[in-house]
Every structure is written in structure tokens, then in C-alpha cells.
Length: 367
Ligand code: AGP
Image (cartoon, rainbow, N blue to C red; front, side, top):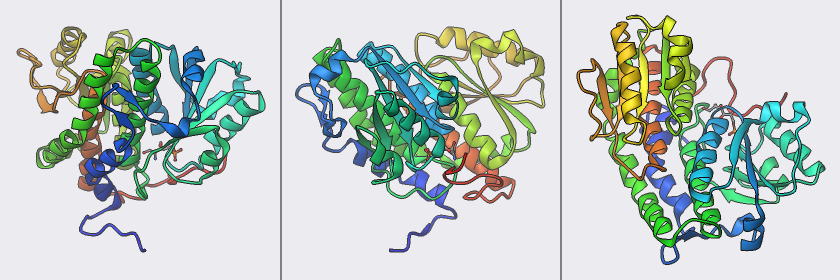
């Protein structure tokens, strides 16, 4: 069947709007509410293999790398296993140490990204075990890995990836729960997270329903030549992904920083002409986050704060974008969705080709 954008003005818009449905699909049949665990049969790892894992190394490019950073935090928090993400495009060039007790995770929508594929081949050549978080069934990476989780996001046409990234996050959450439950995660925590995962598709719908207000904010941001996106810990990869989406389709200079790093340099660039989009979830860092934003406000920097209802920003002069609250480990994905819409409406305002931005390809299959 021909795949078209239907009533939507672009594939990106269609794909963003599909997220509640595609999120339900990736979760479907993969969660065990009774025992508070995951059912990820395709991993080809039994509980003994899962308990033997001493480290997780996640590899992906661009947005898949940033979601990998979100995934690393989930794995450390829920499974208490050291985890980190690295750009797959860099990995093989530094002669990485491949460890038998490390689980390698390759993340890719297309399954054809050459840098990620070559990283997988390098790991396997040296005896490492790799699983894939891949959307396209039967793609090169899917064929190359030892097991994995298909993302079931359906075809994604727009260069700016949205629904596949959301499902990458959900796949990481399920992996972290399953790994956690044969290690240190309690049944109560497993159930708490599963209930929260099951609530996410409807919460994503609620964020999408705020599109008109987000479009207005985006039109204002589109006027700026340069923007900051800031966040901390769980919020930092959200900021990276927000900046990535913004620069890909609006062609504005959008730079992500840890909020805590502002005072170590980038604050010098803050001015009334340089807005900051700040990720401020209701978590253990909220007061420090709000404190740092006052430094921006004091220098006349316009602020858009992506946050939760309960967060008080005091007398901060800012625009608030409020998203529904999940469990704090899962909040990053709900904080990411409005950033997709900000990028989209900024690009629309600037009259750009949303689905095929200049200089970029949907999947990068040559080095
Ligand atoms: C996302 O919006 C980008 N177009 C890009 O960073 C992409 O995520 C990256 O090229 C990886 O693609 P893949 O997931 O198909 O491997």
C-alpha cells in the first residue's frame, strides 16, 4: 500500500500524532503485571545471562544516541547496572575494549545506519554480545545482532525521527525492568513502573492536545538565531534531543547544555536575543534547576520552562509548558514530546521543508 501523510500536512506531523498508538503497540504483550517484570523473549537471554551482565554499553547515532543516554539512566536506576551511551560513529575508532560481561545495545530506527552497523560488527568480531533496539524488521542491524526488541513504530518517513524515538525509550524501560527484576528491583517497583508505562500512551495524547499553545511558543522561538536547551541528569538527554530536533528542521543554532554547566561558560552568551528552553521536572533537582534559571532571567534571557504542574518557579519571568507527571524514571519521554512540536512549528513558521530538511538523509548508509 502507498504510505501517505493522509490529512496531515507532513509525515512528521502524522508520525508525531501516531505516538499514542505506536507506544501502545511496543508495550503490547511485553509486560507481566503480576510479577512486575518484562516479557522480552527476543532478547535471547535467560535470567542467568541477565544476572551475569556487569555493564551495559549503548550505541547509536544522533537522536538514537540521545535516547540511548536516557536508556542508560533508566538501566542504572532500575537495574543498578553501570550503563552508558556512546556515539556509534566514534566507538570503533578508539579501539574499544570489548568485555564478555558487558551487554552491548545497538539502537537504530532504520537498522541501516552504517556507523551503528559497523560498531555492531566490531563488537561481534571481538566476541561481544549485542542486542538491537531496531524499528525496521529484517534490516541490516536486526540481522546482525544476537537478539533484540523490535520497536513496532511502523514506517517512519520524516527525517526528524519522533515515534521511533519514543518507542526506543519505552523499549529501554522494559529492558531495564526485566533486567532489574532478576537483580535488585522489587516486585512493587516493577508493578509501579508497569502501571506508569501503561498510562503513558494516554499522557502522550494529552501533550499532543496542547499543540496550539506549543505552536504559539514555537513561532516566538523561531525568531531567534540561537537558542539553548538545558536540563540535568534525566533531563539532559531530553535537552539534547530537543536541540537536535530544533536544529534539524528549523536550521537555527540550538545548543544543549547541562543546566549545571551554564555558569562554567555558556552563561556568557545569554542575552535577550538568546532564549533558553529548560527541562525542569518535578524531581530531586528541582530547586537547583530553578535556581540556575534565575541566573538566566537576571541576564534578560527569555525562558521557556518544560515542567510539571507542581513545580513552582517563584517569581521567574518565563513561559511554562506543563506536561503530565509520570513516575520520575519515565518522565523524560513526556518532557520530550512538546520539544518535537516546538521544532515542528518553528520550522513551519520559517517555511522549511519539514520532512526533507536540507543536507540530511533519513538514514545515513555511507561513512
Ligand atoms: C533524528 O531526528 C535524526 N534524523 C538522526 O539523528 C537519526 O536519529 C540518526 O541518523 C540515527 O538513525 P537511525 O535511528 O536510523 O540509526
